[in-house]
Amino acid sequence: MTWTVTPEPYYSPAASALWRAYYTEVSDRWYLLHEGRRTDPDELEREIAARTGAELAPPSGQLLLARYDGRPAGTAGVRLLDTATAELTRVFLHQELRGRGGAV
Image (cartoon, rainbow, N blue to C red; front, side, top):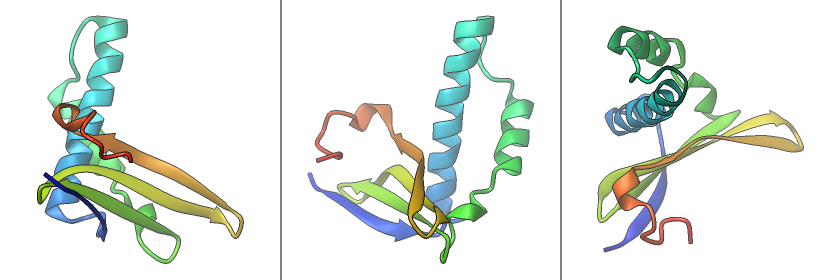
């Protein structure tokens, strides 16, 4: 099994599916810890629609998509804040693929 990482449009179907998985995991973790419940589906849809990822389009940003054996597995976004500073965002890897060498 091999890993590949390539630039990906933030609006691609693979990127959108990974963003949904990322947001669901993070949101559910918070709600389960603080309110004992999972994220409300309507709230999830509102938040996903409000955060499109457009800031990760060139020239001021880039979304990178990791694939494990050709299957979309995770993302990392880089957003330029100024000429000397960048922000790493939307860092996510499907839970079942963690620990398989994707960060090496």
